[in-house]
Image (tube, rainbow, N blue to C red; front, side, top):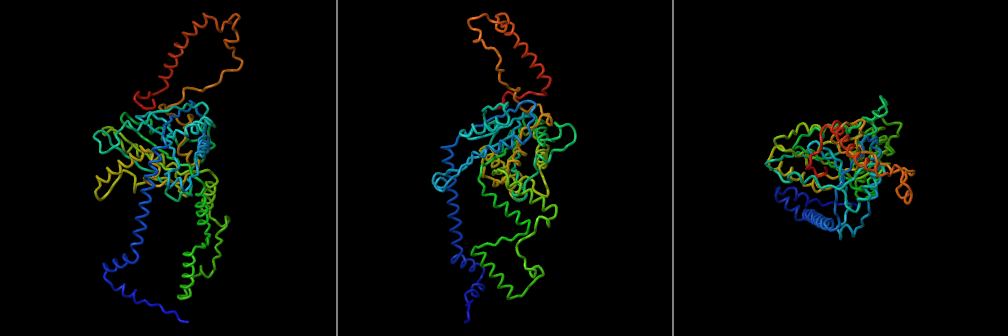
Amino acid sequence: MEIVIDTTRLVEFSQLPIDQMAWEFFINVGWILLAIGFLYGVLLIYKVRLSTQWAAKSLKYIILAVDVPKGNEQSPKAVENMFTYLGGAHGSINFFEKWFEGKFQPSFSYEIVSLEGYTQFLIRTPIEYRNLIETSIYSQYPDAEISEVDDYVDTVPHTFPDEEYDIWGSEFVQSKDWSYPIKMYREFEHMMGPSETQFKDPMASLMDLCGSLREGEQLWFQLIVIPTGFDWLAATDKAVDKILGKKKKSDGLFSKALEWLGIFSEMIFSIWSEVEEKKDDGKGLSMVELNPKQKKQVEAIQAKASKLAFEAKIRVIYVARREVMNRSKVTSGFVGYIKQFASLDLNNLKPDTTATMTKTAYFNKDKRLIRKKNLIMNNYVNRDDYSGRLPGIYDIEELATLWHFPLEANVKSPLVQKAPGRKADAPSSLPMVDDFMGGASPELFNVEVLRREKQQPERNEMTEQRNEDINRKASAPDNLPFA
């Protein structure tokens, strides 16, 4: 039985002029691709509009300022536990809720803000999750103080160019596949010196940079965290299989067609290399056969896959009055802070110079630069979790490495807002006024003693104020939203 393939139409098509060839292709096939692209765009616009309406009706956000106690000795492990508790905010969304109601997973924004050198840790959360956030903090920092504050972004203009202010901003992205983790906080520990200094807190450089800002300068650091499920685990398995050289067979129709096409081409051309002659069984390498770098990568990926993870993205903005703006100092300083988490054989973070950074080159530079400045500011102000670059996957240890409260033994930053002191419950043996009702009052409740004690707080307050003025290098400006 002979199979005859008529190639007349293909030959005629190949002999057409370029413009006619393109038109013939569009008439026969191309319109299908164009229609699919159009329908996909319409669906995206419909979903965005529906989600915007649902968010405006169902979500209201607040900003919480967190003041940790003076003398904080908690390691970033405490913040890692905070993020673990945040996993309770994840909820499943079915098809009807997603495409007919516009429902989506709300995000949280963990921020570090320096306004003219005064530094504050902030968390932006939907109101319905306020108790969840506060519980996650108090469970690890019982003496912390949490208060609702105004949004600091309203202290500067949101539209550029502006006569008084200028802006630099960028998102930071993972340079490799997110299956590879960055350098963790535990890698900043060593066994030299006293126990309280064995952890070299990477937050020290950021706190020093924040404290060095002058009047008219502001630095905003935003870590947007989106609770997610466990679908991302399949990608870590593929990354490990790629390192081990394992080949996963696919049962798809397209894959089968490619497999048969490969066999047919081998029969036709009879091109056999030494590798092909060895008949690769697809099992790949064992852990014993891996070199040290590959072994470290496999272990790091599997360690990341064993922990809870979130979708997350990093965004930073430096905004200042034009006469005091020092872009090279602040941007280089922040990039240096981020570079601390680079593990060159695993993963590292880098500024997104291609899409979101306020930097342009070549054609129409000025207009494109203004557009980028307005986009980065708008996305930051709205805490937009999907505009710009898509979020990556970070496990709780990576998040705690990037955002945690500094250890006071390592970080001497006088302008970081802290809780005034440690709180404690009254001892159970303390006598109460009610215990002495109807009887003679002891000296503790004597009128003369109370009169003397009434004057004592004023003297104590003067003493504390004098000590505070000596210890602090500066005080927070009165016009700050969280002062």
